[in-house]
Image (tube, rainbow, N blue to C red):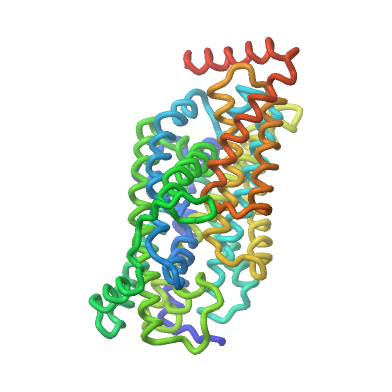
Length: 500
């Protein structure tokens, strides 16, 4: 099918893309130094950071993939149980992690690991972040390309390239300030687009809202709680509360993409307010798009498609392109692109910040000048954009559910990083060799769980963090001759933290 996009919709999409790029370039025009380019001058208001946090973590996977979860034959509202853990995890991040990040002039989350352990641990953590972040966001880029393909008939691979290139343009020029303010605008656009689309679906149903409610009840689509304790089930109360809390501790406590936003705040209190309230906003968003999925199930039960859907991720995109009237198609597609670009721009900027400060700068014999690091960061932004485009193209034939695949990658990587942070914060005798041994053990155990068991992805972080912590702590007994030196280093770290 080669759809012909109405000129009104094409104009709306073109105006959105041009406006986003222009906004990014305009708000980023002031930033010339490293502090401005990577941290927005550490002078961004809490509400802007809140919007950026929410827009960054929800992305196109929320807009297109979560409706597919509720649309499925056995789909319902149980996915929402994850947000219970999200709320608990963010509160812990605000109380435990944020005070450490605001002691000293940090540019990345992994500088703390160098303070406590060694440059090698910092580099290992940064590399793990870079792999996880670019794999997960390459999948999100692919998901956005599905909508572009259906709208204009552009081959999926070229759709991936087009979306990636547009995002790279304003990110590489505007820096972090452009990313945050663009995120806020994109958040408003894609939530509005989702709400408008839901209203149109309900209006198209034979009995409107009453039909939707009756369908949801008769097909058990309103089920929210499942108190079964079973690691092989994805969406239960326990996987949501425990798994979701550990996942959030990892993604919001150790992920450079989120930590970079905290460091942009004017005060620690502003960062804490932004991260804590973001959990409630994400819960509302997830609920909205799950209801969209239920409404889509009711619609296509009344008006079956000519060919069955092969993947849930494509259902909402198909409805947008084939069922909405001109004008609303363009608005909703702009919302899809907004959701994607908010995450991708943040991912590119944080990846560049981590690679430049954690890998490139330590590799140089002398600390590069801020001007040099800005230039390197811009080149790295382009490089990571190319990586994510490549991952998105590869996902055309690999990924079945993007939101689950992306969250599984996050749980795998950030569970390990969370265990390393726990070793730094809660132990004295653990040295760099031990923490690296713990991280390798955590990776090995999670690899076995992923490919050798039926344990589902919400538990990955909850298993990876304690495994890494326990293995690292036990490994500290293997090198007793290093105990005194590392104990002194750990005590010095704590003294420095308290004095600052």
